[in-house]
Length: 246
Image: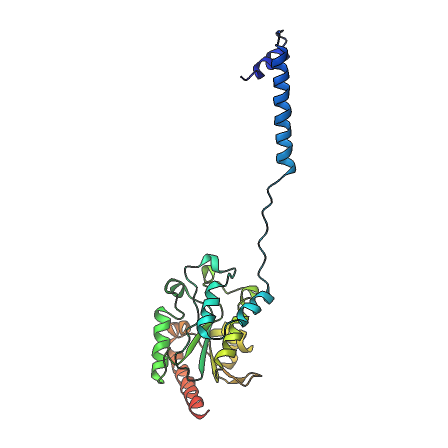
C-alpha cells in the first residue's frame, strides 16, 4: 500500500498518528529505491565502438584474392563507408578472355546502382557500340570503376573514399596485367596516371610498370557533345593497332 500521501499531509501541518511499522517500511522502501538509482548511475551501459576501417586493413583485404571470382567476393563483402547508402555494390566487369585492354571509369551512376552493373544505361550502350566498332566487347575488355558504390547525389568521391578503394584497383591491375589502360573521364585520368584530360586527351603515358595509359572522354560527355565521338573513334583505332602489334 502506498503511504506517501501521509507524508504530504504531515508536511502540510496535519497531525496523524502513523503506525511505527508503516513508517519503518516506508523508510526501507526509500533506501532500496535510492540504492537502485545509485546503481543506475554507477553502472552505465557501455556500447563498444566499432573499429574504423584503416588503409592497412583494406590493403590486407585487397591482397587476399588470387582470382577474379575471389576478388568480386571480397569487394561485395567490403564494408566501405559508402556501402550503407547504395542499392547495389557495382563490381568490375572482368573479361572472360582479355585482349590486353582494361577500361577504368570514374564511379557508378544512379543507373549502375540500380542494375548493379558498371556502365549501364545510355552511356553503357554507347560504350558497347564503340567497343564493337573495333571488334571488342565486355567479354574481351575488363571495365573497372574507381569505386564500387554510387555516391550520394552523384557527388565526386572524397579523397578518403578513393584511397580506401585504391588497393583493390591496384590489385586488379596486378592480377589482370593489362597492356593498355583506357581511362574514361577526368577523374579516372587523374587518379590512375595524374593526367589532365583537357590537355592530354588521347595522348599515351607509360607507367613505371610498363602499362600504357590513354585518357578519353567519358561516354556521358560524348552523349552531351556528339562531335567528340570522332576523336574517341580515332583513339580507339590506335588502341586496336597497339594491341595487335604488342
